[in-house]
Length: 124
Image 1 (cartoon, rainbow, N blue to C red):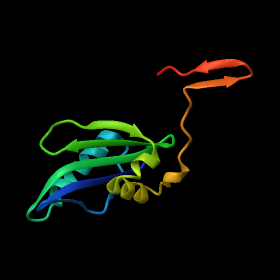
Image 2: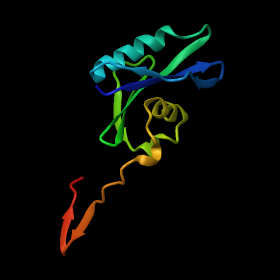
Image 3: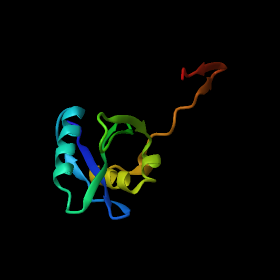
Image 4: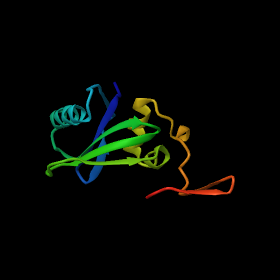
């Protein structure tokens, strides 16, 4: 079972804030997104409005991030490297919740590799 972490960006007055992330323990990404959506929609304080919900998990040395903008249906999912995600404070908080070190990411795979005179090209 891969643990997930979720966090919500909340509009409070003119500022965008987020509460501490929460671990999600469902077995599938769909269940994790539904659980996160239910929790964050129900945990708003008076005067707060929900801006976005993020669900994060680590898979094969990279981060899978799913986000949903409030008022829109569907989730946008993308994959990013840990150091890139650590630049955003809300994603860095999720990484800390999951126990992921941004510096422990795998190095990027080169597009062209030469081994013993043979050239290997990665299809992009």
